[in-house]
Length: 286
Image (cartoon, rainbow, N blue to C red; front, side, top):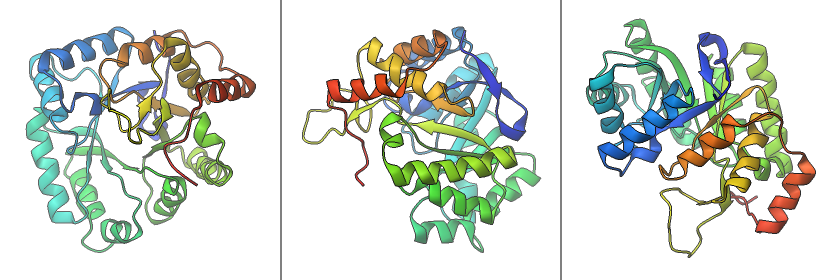
C-alpha cells in the first residue's frame, strides 16, 4: 500500500501519491473507472481534478454518483475574477455530483498580471473565500507551472494564507540552481505554516519538441518501470512532498507500482546516471 502523510493543516491523512485526474481528460468512462479502482486498491485516497481538464470532472463525477466520495476531493478554477470563478466552481459541483469539495485551488497562477487580478479586489480569491464561508469548500490552494512557480507561490503566501501549493518538482528541476533555491525558500515557509506541498511533472523525460505525441502528457514521459521507479521514489524521498500522478491513464499503473514499493530514494548519483543515460531534459528552459 502507498504510504500516507498528513496533508498540511487539513489534518487529512492523504496518500503520498495523489490521483491526478488530468489523465481522464479524453478517456472513456470505463477507463476512468478502472483507473480510480486501481488507485483505491493501492490506498490512494486523494483525487485532484480541474475544471479545465476536458471531461475529467465528468468522469470523476460519474464514478462519485455511483460510489460516493471515499477520498479527499480537490478541484481547480482557472478564472481570475470573483464572478467567473464562482460560476465555474458551481458548474464543477454539478459535474462532480457533490455539494462541496475539500480543496479548491487557483489554477496555473504565475503570470504577474493574472496574479494581481486574481488576488486583488474583485478577484477569484474573493470568490474562494466566500465559498469557504458558505461551506461549499473547506480549504483553499494555489497551483503553478514553470520556473517562476516557487517564487510566485511565495509571493502568494505573503498575500494570503493558502492551505496548499502545487508546482513542478523532479530531479531535473533540482538541477536548476535558481529553481532549487526558490523551491527551498518556499518549503521553509510551507513547513513553518504547515502548508501542504504537491508536486507535478516528476516523470518528465524530455519536451515533446517536434516528436509525435504518443502519450496524453504535456511532455515526453519516462516509460520503463525501472526509470519511473527512480523518478517517483526520488520525489517521495522528500517526506514533506506529495506527488501528483501522471497525466496518462496507461502509465498510471507504473507510477502506483513504483510508489507502492518505495522504501528509500535513489541517490543523487543514481539520478545523474539516469539523466545521462536517457539524455533527459527539463521541460522548462532556464
